[in-house]
Length: 160
Image 1 (tube, helix red, strand yellow):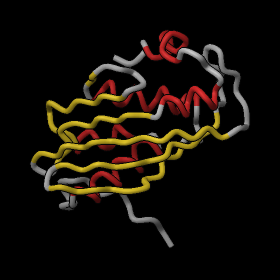
Image 2: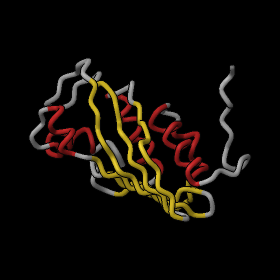
Image 3: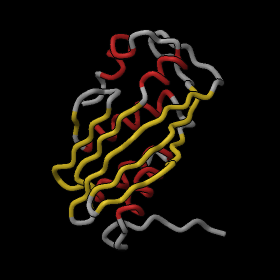
Image 4: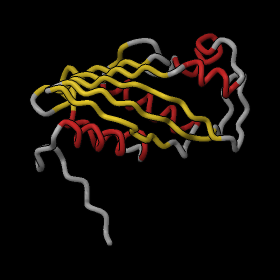
């Protein structure tokens, strides 16, 4: 059985939930976020608590590339989606193994899990903004880092 080929938003009218699920699959899980550029409004912005600042689609793409560089086996499972008109909230779990060293953290075969809550705002069938809050305590506990931002600052500065 062949998987269904990627169909753009222009070719298929997606519900908000379908759009979000496709977005997570093609960006975080497959690292093909550039295929989703047409899914965002021109003024799209992305914020996540790990980076701590707002960025545009290019910064979003850089974030995915950066994370997948250190965790090439990254997978995001969506635990729940709540839909309220043009707003969606997702709870997700990020899974992966650190394959490249980070400041203060050596690679290992140990799977790191990180819980996240994301809020998505849609406008005219496209994603206008995405805000993701990670459970930083989970990351600190699993990696042994004591001050995440100060140790990861050189890595995170790569995201525009």
